Image (tube, rainbow, N blue to C red; front, side):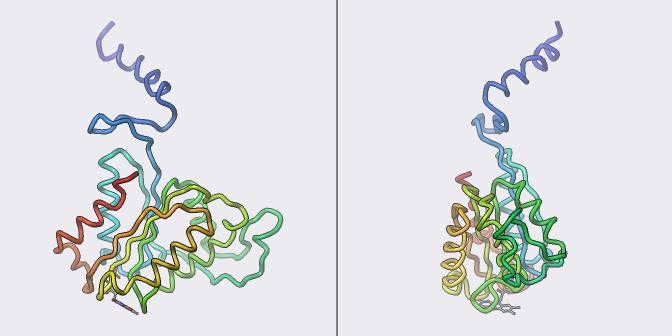
Length: 210
Ligand SMILES: Cc1cc2nc3c(=O)[nH]c(=O)nc-3n(C[C@H](O)[C@H](O)[C@H](O)COP(=O)(O)O)c2cc1C
């Protein structure tokens, strides 16, 4: 039997022995492949948030993980109106907008990255709309045990991020998400972080513990 054919017969068995979603990465380590969903809350495509999240995702991909990146400004997200329908019955939100697409992506992910610039010491309005609409997960517990990270550039840097980090940590905990860590970056002009190697490196290291 040719060598190639012999290998192709054996490899499904090897993967089976390691369990579903387990692969050997480039360094020879056995890892569980994670599906990472990055949600970008900046209106600026190729802005600082976008580039920093790209750096984190590219590094994770090198280790064999899969990812998807969505720009929240491409989606209509209506404000939560506290109707509380999501606390009963099917535990779903009934507002009519693009959130079902985002809920589907969130449900399918193992790991979340929320990327938002600091706007007035908090997230952008679009990211806040998304966070408010995570309300169904309080009851349905579908986020329980998933890891979630934060990427947040700002003009002032980490000293401006306290309210956001504290609020997100509490919110993640309430939702059952495990706080993975953050990359708090000092950058202001559109895309200028690309020329800041030390800041880009912080983003590249963000998902090292996956
Ligand atoms: C409305 C608005 C509010 C902002 N508020 C703050 C702030 O409170 N503190 C800060 O350091 N930077 C603030 N910034 C600057 C942004 O956080 C900064 O430019 C960031 O790099 C933008 O990221 P982006 O390129 O991903 O959009 C603000 C910018 C805008 C447009």
